[in-house]
Image 1: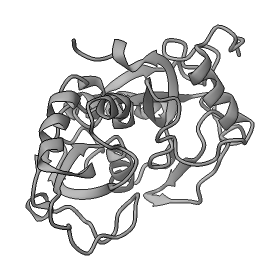
Image 2: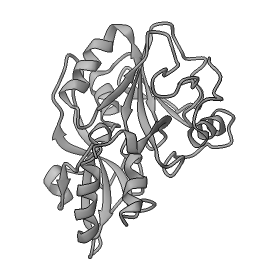
Image 3: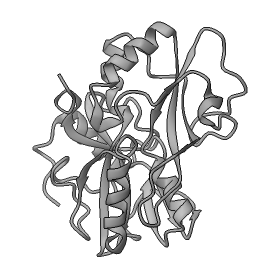
Length: 260
């Protein structure tokens, strides 16, 4: 791997802290101002089908980089980084089942693995904070009943990120996040969770929700956890992803990856 010395300090330090075990939790709030990505690692034989799935579902799966087979270094977004070690937690799927999460892929890595880095909504948190929209609480990752567009064996429901905002904050959030099309962009739904079949009782990330409190509006964005549901539905023999909310910190400043 190339030396990390030329990477911007905040993003490089975040990855080093993860690699060396000093940071083991969510990447929310970590190196704010840099693009974060979700990860999908799949064998080369399925890479085209998965790329087609992403192309047909760009709101949920905006691909920012694809690595060469067997190469764990994202040479465009974070030269010198290692996708086997630089995420705090990975989800492993075999034959439609999620196995125990791991914190290192070195022993699982194969020579024909292709890694996809998919833009994450965590990226626009800094912009939301600057606009007065809080990002440190009231956020969940949940399944919906909105279908994705199939490609080959890949299919399944759209996974969404739900945030609770005041009506005023929701308007601002739509304006801000629409500038980030490579990180899911504007919301896919605002209002009643039941209208999109959002499963608030069994979130993929966050505590169960019994009711939405008065004074806030549920706002839903497409989420990069969507491919994990596709892996379960397709019963892919082996697919590795980031664990929800445990993404990859790139060296790309978020303000350079959005619309003016």
